[in-house]
Length: 160
Image 1 (cartoon, rainbow, N blue to C red):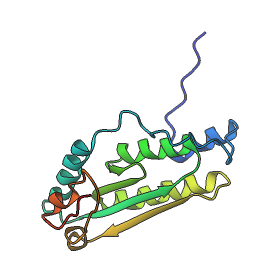
Image 2: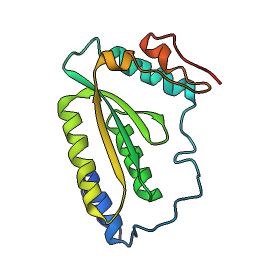
Image 3: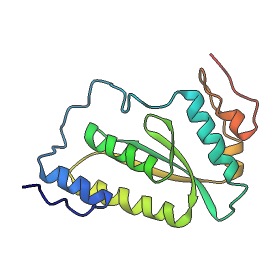
Image 4: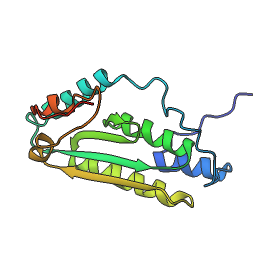
């Protein structure tokens, strides 16, 4: 007999179920493995971020913000990354996301991630940092193959 499918759960409830199934806060960190081996290349990520930034001009009710985290457990980290992508955030680096979303979506993300943080014993940290368009435009990026400045119209990038 086929098992009855449960109604879809919200993100924190999924993590509670994982926790009840035996997730420990001391799980292996994965030895530096990529979080998502199918993560788009830097050029695709830049295009997504540029698109996100350009949409700011179209919808003044949206807000720009970064979500950054330091999460030890691979399973939780991967769920959070997938959740952030699903709700409209764009991955900038392995643990940094950029978004241009409605304030209500910003608040929802905050509530969900706060609830996730409270589900299990940990020493993780999650930062959600709102930024203004001017702050994004004045941001400087240093690094190889990073064209974030091109997305915001700056030409002051140092490449090594």
